[in-house]
Amino acid sequence: MTRFSDFYQKGFHYSLEVFPPKTGKGVASLLSELKKLEAIKPAYVSVTYGALGSTHALTKDLAIKVYDEVRAHTAFHFTCVGMGKAEIKEYVEVLYKKGIKLILALRGDTPKGEKVFKPARDGFHHANELVSYLATLHDFSIAVAGYPEKHPEAKNLDEDIDNLKRKIDAGAELVITQLFFENHLYYDWLDLVRHKGITVPIVAGIMPILKLSQVKKITELCGATLPKTLIQKLEACGDDERAMRAIGVEHASIQCADLKQHGVSGIHFYCLNQAESVLKIVNGSTSLF
Image (tube, rainbow, N blue to C red; front, side, top):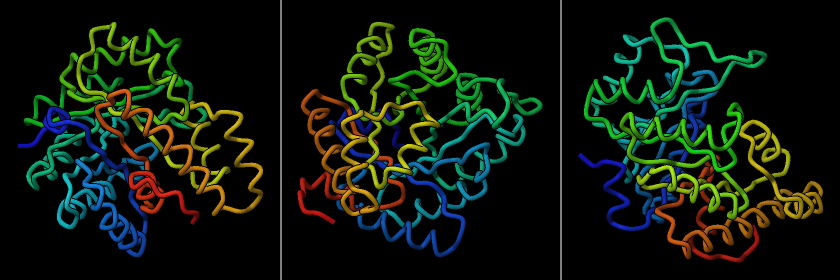
């Protein structure tokens, strides 16, 4: 069985995150994009779980399709939202029997309008509890999320890193970071994480910007900072989304080159189900869209 930790013992790797489309046409389009992305030899493709567990059935189905049709290992996201222990076991059992044993374990989103996360009956409050339970079911390889600018619900960065340490101590063997647009924030956070005794590989999450309105919405949800100069460049594009994509490629290319120079274990692209920007970044293309 290949584990998350195995990839990074062999050196630097790219990986990809996709979300489940809600139509058959969307799934076909995504699989076509992933076929293009086989060119960068991703270590694995992770399939997201959706806000409030809203796509959990789609996640399972898409993870199996990616496993069957794409030349990359498949990981699936799983959260504490909406399921108790028996339901969790039933869900992950299907994927385990299929051969999909890489899991990104997350707490999941607090429902809109509520201040406190409420687990399902016989469920879990925190991601470290989910990690511990998953580890009792099978020999899953488990990754967790890290937040260079802290989780939106954490009081401060120190508390958030303590929470991350609990997830590692529970059995996680890889950290994939939330997206960020300023590398110095990642480096400062990484120093603090290592100082806490967290030694597992840490993969940097990078999202190529496709359009301003979209990235503003995403960063508002996850708490990532958009540099003012980057916002100004995007605003100057007006309604020209092609120009915005070019700026997104330029910014992410600079980030990735710097991260690789600093010896990052890997780069995890939040590719928004589209291949072109990622291919341009990895191939060093400077051509416009």
